Amino acid sequence: MKHTPNILSAVLVLIAGCEAPAASPPLPDGFVYLEQVAPSIVQDMRYATAYNFTGAPVPGYEAGRCILSKPAAEALAGVQASLVEQGLTLKVYDCYRPQQAVNAFVAWSEADDTATQGIFYPALTKEVLFPEGYIARRSGHSRGSTVDLAIAFQATARDVDRSGHPCDQAKGPAKPAGQLDFGTAYDCFDTLSHTFDARIQGVAAANRALLVESMQPHGFENYPKEWWHFTYQPEPFPDLYFDFPVR
Image (cartoon, rainbow, N blue to C red; front, side, top):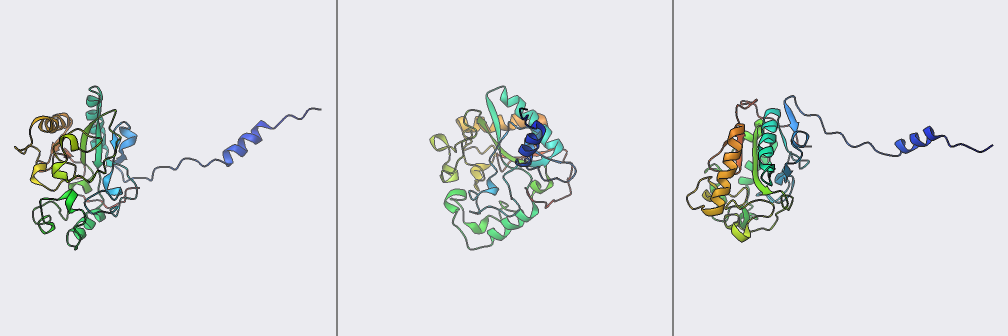
């Protein structure tokens, strides 16, 4: 009699030999992973890497994932839908920020370490970063509805910029890879980063205006000292500063 394989047993063996995809760690009520709401938005979460003003991955960023309050994420999906029709996309650099990361920024500002000055604050001394408000003990990012982002062409949005150009010269031919020309790089500690600084002209000024005009109808207010920084209003957690890690 010809032997007939037990198909069910074979399937069970295959299943047992395969690992299930890792589930996303649970988040506090009211928060979501951005990719679950707007998967086409490109993420380049800088503080999970060493390419940021501290020169090292920042405590609290155990993964390069954007987390936001649910209303902010849904509103950002609306912004993305309007840009996709133009062949463009959002590219996020930072979203929810744990308080422990903010504490690490403060500690860095007080340490004798200027290794990243030539890239992120070439025109300033480190001593002025805290008094001038570039670094603070509390950040709106820790409330979950603030996002740092740029606009990019869809075709090149996933290019990763680690060029090391001085941020105040990162424009025109030297603009950061993976985004439009905004006149400075992201996280540039300089008055040139003010959204409507009069020295920013031409294409870069137009791109900053496009970003503001794309975000405002969906409830996002720009912080005028940083062209990349927007907060969704009304904030669901206006008085809470969270510290759960990004995983």
